[in-house]
Image: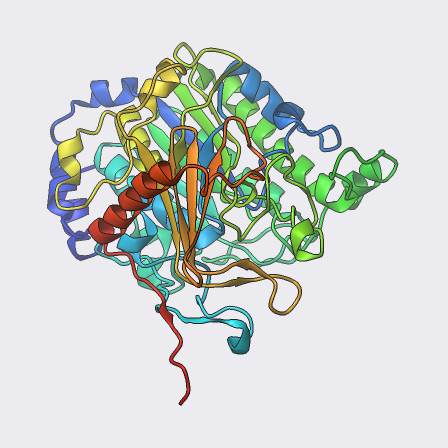
Length: 472
């Protein structure tokens, strides 16, 4: 790699000269000692949808094995749906900075049921923001991405223009899918298997490293389609808790098979000990909607709610990391963590100095200290969510989310609902189900957390909805 490669992309990278200069600071031998990085992201997989997270119906032996060899962050959060999560993961920036608050429009559902005028939502990740792939590639990593992108459809927004040396984008179907760029595959192949084939090939070709593989699966997102032989395996299995659907279980199994193949490839090539593997999901599972009058394909209990909601079932997701020789085996960490932490984490793993991010805000903090010692506390005190629009439910007027936001500080979580100004306060340690609203009993804590939320909104220039004008 050389500086000219990045200088030619300076407009896209927005300050690419600084990123390119980093590569000249590191001798090749030093680059090759840094760990490879594999980040596998499931789509819509709930917090309890893994054996190691409590499921007694879904079968995830490969992911469970990964957890037994590494660390689980049990208090990790994403956004309530996928596009804002992906923007935050790639840039380390909260949604107010990128303008990506949801998928599509914030004007979801029937207009007559919406009580507020909402801001415009961005659907393309602005080109002025650098991604973790930009930083890793400039630091000498070969970068590859195969799967769901959802951060812009035009050529300028393709991941191959956002820091990835190799990139294939595909989503929307699990069979007979299209790819960008067009890529041949066997008739009838399942998408998760196709993406894993591309990932395995990438690892094999770049085994000498350092490399960074980003594998964002489309599974287990709807449409609910799975390999018939796996579906039949689960049809005869007795449901457990709210986990009951054999097609969904088969989709989970295909994601687990993918993780198993990736890990087996690393081991067969003799590079597993120098590879950090991270597994997570982009938002909560599609379930937990009993209070809205229906149930989804899965269940996030004991968490309240599901995808599209600011309650824990919508934002808390699995997070597993295996870093051989560093992460303690089979441990858990309860420190509150969130999507914006991924970019600084990956840059620290790669040895990229913080100065390389000059000119771009840094909302997250590195999780590397937690990887080394799960009992540590991070210097950052609070994590935030902001959704200034609507996410419809199955029934008219029964919203998964109305405009609102949240703050978590330690064990405490405050939610604000903008339509009526309602505030809800929960202690997540004693009330993980978010059933006992303590707002009236603890007004001082409410005032303190709300003040911090307001300061954060002002600092990030968060877009806010407005009450609808009343007709004369």
